[in-house]
Image 1 (cartoon, one colour):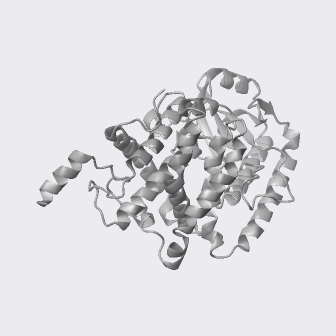
Image 2 (cartoon, rainbow, N blue to C red; image 1 turned 120 degrees about the vertical axis):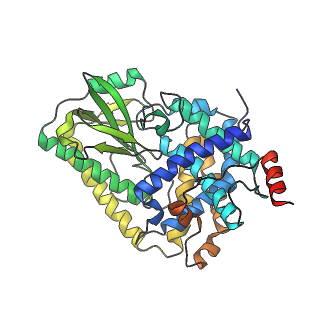
Image 3 (cartoon, rainbow, N blue to C red; image 1 turned 180 degrees about the vertical axis):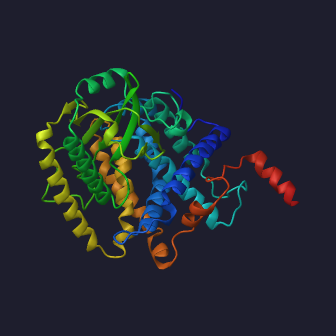
Length: 402
């Protein structure tokens, strides 16, 4: 098994190009660069989280790789309601390289110019981890939905058959009930994670025969006990919920952060059968009776209201500072694949908190968000500037006459 980070600069830059193209497409489609919130300082909390990953992520990934390979991580993720999951992989990659791009911009560099502060081995570690885990996770061996006709198939055929055997036709009212449940769980995840889409994942499509397909929508992290604000008197009944839909006449398009677009957007007429599931620590999916849906939805709605009220009382400082814990939550999930992996929780938390202090006051004191946010929304060039190798640096020096 190759050592983590044992890739060439050309391979690193190819990963940067491909992921950057997908992230730029997502940012423009979702208008994420202009996202603002009354509850959360989204630009600064994200920039803080990226900085924490840049400072601390590579060494923790190296520690992780001493116990489990990226390929094995990808294989263990190939199940219903896994945490970590595809978004988590994307967060690892984009966090490190968003922070790196911020540093390039702050240094006044142009694309292709060598970065004096380049942490080449750290960059290789992050990119190699992502490439190897993603290719083992996805059924097609690719890294990105865009490489596979915008699909996101991760379940083995046997798992799909087992899932499909538990789907049944639903009435129009039942379909609407399950769509309301999905909307409630999505809002809960959205508020829990400070308006980040963590815990919300769609994958597929999987062939269901006769032209039909199965798409799975997952809601995970429903019983989080790592985020300091997560505890609420109203407690979700299950740690995760998956809704599996057998669809006909509906096209799908999956993106780099685990979302799906349906065409047509109203999928109710296209649902032939569906089912609701949860998974325990053993990873085995268990059907959830439709009779429980009302209670599941009620608990999620109550908990979401409590989280909203908590967030409404956060100080302006904490509305940005919480980004350290938010992004630590992603990294922690990889270590929880290990026996006794919870022992890494507090070291990761402490490391991210310390890293956040390096930039928090400076970014809070600036009325404008970090410049990466304007760059993400406006750049027409490469989203992530490539690493300049020795040959590139020498050719640029000659071109400038240095």
